[in-house]
Image (cartoon, rainbow over all chains, first blue to last red; front, side):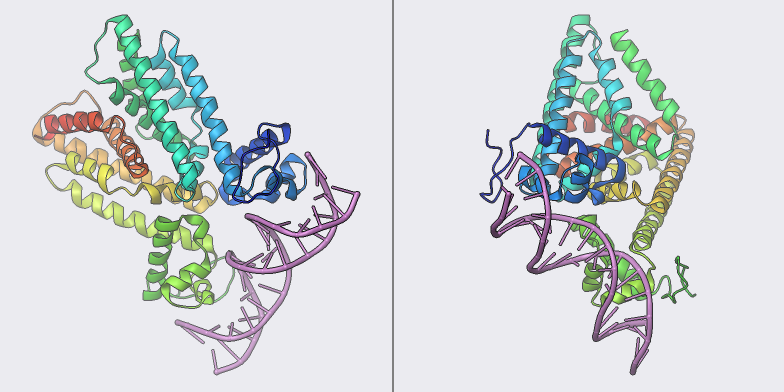
Length: 196
Length: 196
DNA sequence: GTCTATACACCGATAGAC
DNA sequence: GTCTATCGGTGTATAGAC
């Protein structure tokens, strides 16, 4: 492995090596804790415990590091979703993931970055489409298995779960909870009706 | 008017003056077009057509400029919402605003910034709470006027409109439209049932 | 592979003249 | 009110030694 090619022909470190992962870990933590204004090569190096120069041995630009960070994260999330889909209450689990474990802060940061970095934008698009495709398949399969019918189509359910989960999550993080009890009760009722 | 006080006692320009507004306009445009990484005092000055130093005559820090930009924007949005609430189809109009005119890009930027700037975070919280309060009042008033009942409470409706509108908007901006037709049809059906 | 050293641009913020 | 000038800091990215 010689690593992905950057814009230059500079020699580069191996994708997937220990340092490579450590740098992505560092980048992810910085995004989560301090936001992307603080995501600099110097800080990543400091966190990992290497010199700044080494970041540019593994990534040709900071943007590339950011894109790789998102890519690794999205692979993990998709794997998790595939795992969930095999269970017998996929809708409930999709909702649990959307509402509880979604990291609203991290998502905000990546969304703002996607406005600027086109490669990241493409990864985000791919991620959304694959996620929704998997969710729709899981929901359809589960409804057939249980022979229940919903007034809402599977794509509509998937989209609503994602949107409500995201907003509730973000507002909770801000400390706002206006209307949350009502909406959570409604979702619970809906999920129970379809999956018991 | 002598302007708001910054951290220092440096003399400052008047809040609400022509230059003051021009700088907020510039900041808003930069956020929308280029993202907050590009929002610097030099670029704001360049856009407005003054020297960089003048930005610090009107705002004691860049963070203060950002907070004021959001504050002005939120006042405008709240005024618009109050206007809408007086009409006889508030639910439809709330949905129109949430789904169409919401600027997903700008919101992403402010959300990421709110993670870092505490004063902005407080403004965002206030804005969300006031918005939802107004929406709930308008929805309740309209439903009473028409003597219709919804299985969903007003806070739940307001929250759902906001969340779905936001996500659909953001995805449209990215170029994703998976499930959008379905969800828009459902919303349309719901609004029609309550407001004709 | 990892390092030292460094070029060069841009940033926020301030001093003080007019 | 608006300007010139400038400080100290930090950023990305590269050259080239070991």
